[in-house]
Amino acid sequence: MSFALHRLPLRLTAGAFILNSGLNKLNLDAESAGGLQQMALNAFPQLEQLSAEDFGQYLAAGEITLGASLLAPFLPRKLVGLGLTAFAASLVWVYLRTPGMTEDDGIRPTQAGIGMAKDVFLLGIGLALLLEKKSATA
Image 1 (cartoon, rainbow, N blue to C red):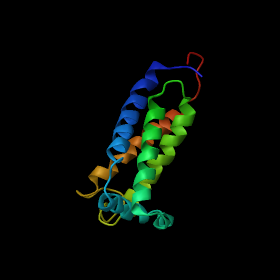
Image 2: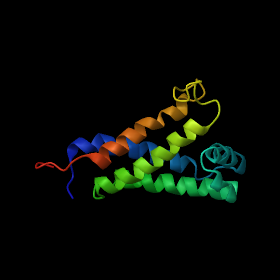
Image 3: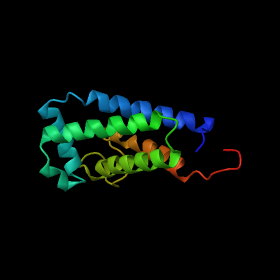
């Protein structure tokens, strides 16, 4: 396990963004948590078993944990890359499954979907961290 300077921008930008998102969700009211849960249900119907409040708290805790993990340079890049890839893939899946987020082709974002379509960048960062081959100098 070694620190590589070229990974710093990937981990800092994604980590700070996700950590901030999680911190902002710590005090979600039931209506806001319910709105997020309704979107998530489009892709993951099993989440219906949770109350809106529990969903909001679990989402906040997950984002805080992932964001902090990305910011911790001592954690292995493959581990945090795997976490980010799984998280971002689930966000992209929600985007693709939520009505009104994509154009008729099912991929390109509508005006309403642009905010969620940006999660593809997080997926790219996660894959970059996960798939990077160990080099002789890293």
